[in-house]
Structure formats: structure tokens, C-alpha cells
Length: 206
Image (cartoon, rainbow, N blue to C red; front, side, top):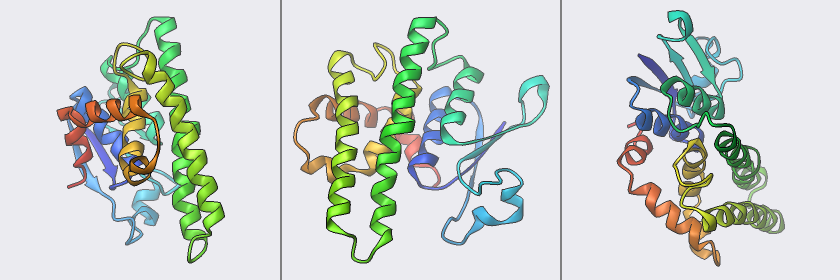
């Protein structure tokens, strides 16, 4: 059994979508970020950074519990744990990891900047917000180019790269509605949203 400590954020949704997709048994522990539960001693023992998501795999290596934080690390761990969504063949694996890292190091941080800059000043500074929005859309255009070549981010099979990107795209629908182009990304997003495992994962925590 895997314990998932999470909240309704893009990072949290990555973990719950992956758990649903792999079919690994898990139970949910909702962390109330507004109440500061992520800063309580019992949570900090799991993740000293005080961030969600965190999983505790009670059937970890050698049968001992294993704690994993960081949504990207969780996706990789669950892929290897289940033997799904991260190929072992070197070329395919490299393609998946490249697309995955592009999501985690470029696209997701660009989305996060939109959130943090909106909080930095009240009202948000128009020029700064416009810069952040343009940078985010530029990062998404790279994903759109990938999706113009094949149905999934890293090729002909769905992978951790797709599960990593979808919550970020879902959270930025207002920006996407106004953006030009990105037709392949929109097609992909509709396909992802229609997947039962993705829909279930996006409903966690309830």
C-alpha cells in the first residue's frame, strides 16, 4: 500500500494521476495548505521542505517503507515500481526523459512564475505578468511541436512526460483559450482529459 500526502495543485495531481494510471493501491491523505499542515512536525518528518506531494510506499525496496517527495521523482519511482510509462529500451527511455525534463524544468516553472508574480504586487504588475505569460506560452509551443510529430510527448506511447504536463495545462485553460495556435497541444489535452485514469487522478483529493 502507498500513502499519498497531497493537495489540489498541479504537483499533487501529477502524483495522483500516476497512481491511478499504474493501478498501484494507495490511500489519500489531504494536506490543508491554507491551514499550514505542510509545516507541521509530522509532515516535515516526511518532507523537510514542507511541500506536497509525498508518498510512503510501505512495500518499498527490500520490503521496507520508502518515502519519496517531489512530483517528478514520484513519477519516475512509480513508473519503475510498476514497470509502466518509462521504457527500458535506451532510445525510447532517453526520448521520454528528455520530454519529461522539459516539462519539469521549463514548462512547470514557467507556469509557477505566473502564480508567484501575481502574488508579488497588488495589483499584479502588467508588464511582468505579460512577460511571464509569453514565456509560458513559448515553453508550451515546444511541447506543441513535439505533439505535431507524434500523438504523445515522447512518441507513440503515453509516458510520464504526458502525466507530468497535463495538470499544468489543465490549470492554465484561461491562458490557452486566448492563445493562438497550439492546435496539437489542444488535441492532446482533450485526449488526456478523456482518459478515465487522468479524470480520477484530477479528482484527488476529494
